[in-house]
Image (spheres, one colour):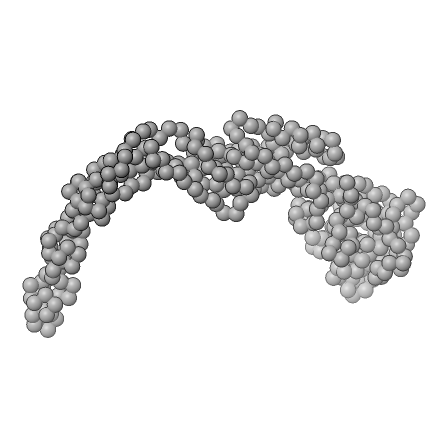
Length: 363
């Protein structure tokens, strides 16, 4: 397992800007301060004089983990479809258990939703068309069977605004219904004038992915930093699921965590699974069909240091001790830095005498 940043040591032959004033580290500690000074020099209003007098007093190995859990949820329901009856066979058999039918399940992680369906032709049945009561024709919906409609020009008055006879309806106040041709009847479009329908059951299915993220660490990195930092894979599992499964089916994952992780967070994974995933599938029309768990890690160095007579105003309990984290590698190949108590984080742009520690600058 390679710890990002843990095997990087400063070499005086490598050019790192503005590091010549950094003091040599005490015996037993790698030279972390040049990277810290590079970070401080990149911050607006910070002043680097506190790094020049800094002394590392302790370096602790820490870890941060991001746990992503994806569950593929399948939802099924029964629908009915129909066509005009054309003499097809009508077995009229029962539907059966809708969960006993096979579908090709997609991968665990999908965007949006996927849908599919199965026509259950063994349920075909001949039934009378209720739209026309089996007659094949029905009352015209436009004129309600009258064969004519009100004139839309004179509004059934028969006269225009100037008192003259309405030219649209010839003074009658009504016009012929164009939908039925004055018959008051229309062919039934539902059964195509047959009077009978062929109906059958359809099982419809929808898949969607639930994703949740859990952070575990023994460091002081904010979750936002863990989420954005480059990480290495710690462990990944992707397995089919069934109602008979529990997270005990992930026993090899939990054993892996117990064996290789300094943080024991398997119970938190179980809690996250039950709260964010299992609860969403706890319905008669839903089942969890796949589960994937990916754990990525960030090796972290928590570095404690003192610098001159500066007192930690951000955390007075620490007295003269300050702390920062070195973790991961940025796009330029340098360690990432996180700190929230640097003693000269404000007004440094006006010179060392103006520089101070301001809580509003601690992000």
